[in-house]
Image (cartoon, rainbow, N blue to C red; front, side):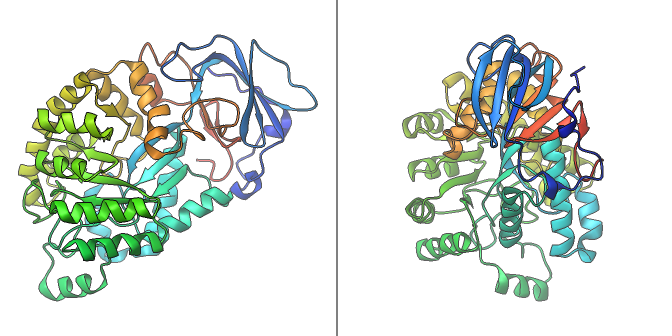
Length: 444
C-alpha cells in the first residue's frame, strides 16, 4: 500500500474547494521507490522528484529529505511514472451508458451535459489520466471546461479539445440522421460541422477554430454509432479531406481522422492527416502509408468491444449492430498487423463509448495485440505527448516539464493491468489523489 505520509500542509480535507488548490506549493519532494521517469527506458530505483511551481525541477538518486520547509510526498513503496494521456475521449454528457442517454435525452440540455462532463473529467483524473484529447463535444462548452481546468477553477485533466467532428451531410456526425423530418430540418439549420465540398470544409474548420478548437477532427468514413449512415466505408472525398487538413494546419491545428475503412484511412493519410483514430480495417498499402507519412494510429481497442456489447444488448439502434460486428471482428487483426509493422501507436480509448474512468483497461488490450507493457505505457506518455505536439511539456518526468505524476502499488512493467488501479495522482504540482483517496472537493 502506498504510504500516505505527507506534511500537514498537504493534508486536504473533504471540504477543501478545488479553487483553494490552484496555487501549488513552491516546492514538493516526491520520494519514489521505483521511478519510470522516461517510459521506454529502464526504470530508476529509489529516487526523489523535486517539484517547484508545478513543474519538475530536479530528480535526485535516493530518498532526499525535504529542504527549506518543502513538503514531502512519501511514495517509497510505490512505482511512480508520468501522468497518462488519452488521445481519444468524449467528456461531454452521458458516456458509456447509451440506454440512460436515450431515456434522458428529452430532459437534458447543455447545462446538464456540462455538469456530467465535470464528473467525467474527475473520474478520468482519478484514473491517472492527467491529459486528454477530447474529440467531440459541445465546442463552446468544452472550451469553457478546458479553460476552467487550466485556471484551477475545477479539477480535471488538461484538455486538448476538438469541438464538433466535421462530417458530410448524412455522414457519421450528422445529428439529423434518422430524425423525423421536422426535427431534422431544425437540426440541420443549426449545425456548423456539416460540409460538402472543399470550400465548405475549409470554412467548417475555421468555424470550429473560432469556437475554441485546439485540434480538428473529421469523419473520413461512416461510424459504428451512426443510426442510418451508410456502413463504415469512405464518406469524404480526398479533396474534402485535403481542404480540412490544409486549412487546419495553416491555423496551427493538428488533425484527427475518424476512420474505419481502409479507403478512408488511405485518403486521409495521403492528404497529410496527423492521426488515424480507430483504423479498424488496415491493409498493407495503408500500413505503408502510415510509415511513409509518419502519422500516428490511435487504435481505441476498447471501443468496438463496448459498442458490440451495447448493440447486442439492445442499447443502440438496430442499424449499428452489423457495423459493430464487422468492426469488432476486423479491429484486432488490423491492430496486430500495424504493431508488427512498426506503425507509430498513441494511446486512445474512445471513452464515452465505454465508461469514464475505465480508460486504463486499454493497456491490457494493447499488450494482447502484441505490444510490450513498456511500449504500451510509452504510447500513453511520451508517444501520446509527441502526437499532441506537446513532447516538450508532457510525457516524461524531466526538469522543465509539468509535474504530472501518478503512482501504483506494484510494477506495471510486469503486469500492465496494475495501471487500472492508480493510488496517487498529481497534475501540474497539485495532488488530486493520495493513498487511493480523492483529495479536495468533491471527496467522493
